[in-house]
Image (cartoon, rainbow, N blue to C red; front, side, top):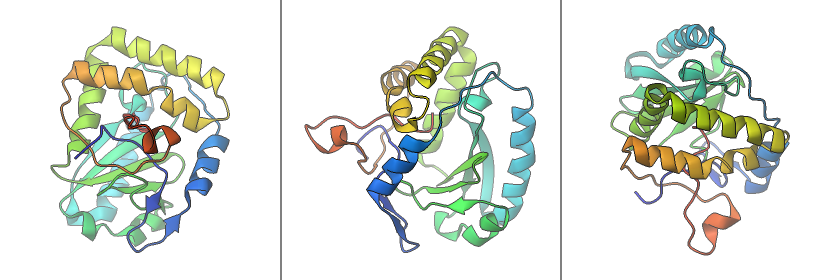
Length: 215
């Protein structure tokens, strides 16, 4: 699967509906960027919400991982709990049950074979077991936890970018790309990801897409 992985632009909801590229860019650019000091309650918040998600997904759920910066103790982060529910069959994800918990389904959101849901406090990145995207996020998380100096580099960049792009989440995210790529390489990630282009740099000139918008 070519590319290291990106996030959204042209979104295909596989029969559920579509979101126009211009709408998504507008949403990303209008979103405020807030990076706050690590909060000791984040692991507890993950555990509580993971229990609800597991119940909603039922027997299809294999496990649920806490990912992103809120999963790395001591690391400043956007106050969003990112999690990866791993399922046996992505086609059997019951969107209606997640919507009853207050989540909005947004289809693949630019990454093939993913199901993405958000309630603006927690983001769910649902993949089928054995997806390389699961390993990528766990490898990145574990690398930051085991390498505090690298984690501080990542934290410093995020804090700086939050000041530079306080109202432009798309620019904030893309500007992290070079360091994310570097850290993924140091961590030993070798997988590839098939994604949909969402920025001008991706559809012209043969440039590679950003590493991810959810790391």
